[in-house]
Length: 165
Image (cartoon, rainbow, N blue to C red; front, top):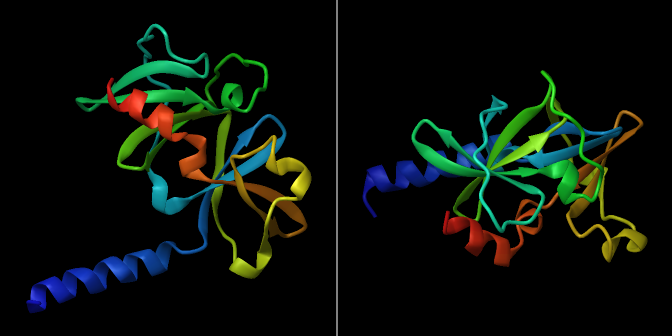
């Protein structure tokens, strides 16, 4: 292994360490959700969305982000909540899950939080069947943050379908 390859590996490991335990938090209704910062590539304002026929209702369509076509999902609809009109606080969180960039439409972005492993507990058994998107529950200053599993949010069959766009 060359010295430069070793340095590249070391910088990747160091970058992963600095992102460990960091979550971007956002609001959907009254709940605060978090997604690991390592999946987040950027946060943008709402863009013009081109509808694509025959996709699930929660996939609102596609956007053109600096020449790259990205499907966008309304997280509120994905979670079975009623649609809410978009406003000036509505954001698109662009995530990269499974080598696919997807825009997540959220009500508003809150902050980046560091949550230690010992402050994250598994979701209760009652929610496992119904809320398969929750990876864990973060406890921060007396509040709970529902931590999402990026890969489950975009189920495998959906990843294949979106990759075709």
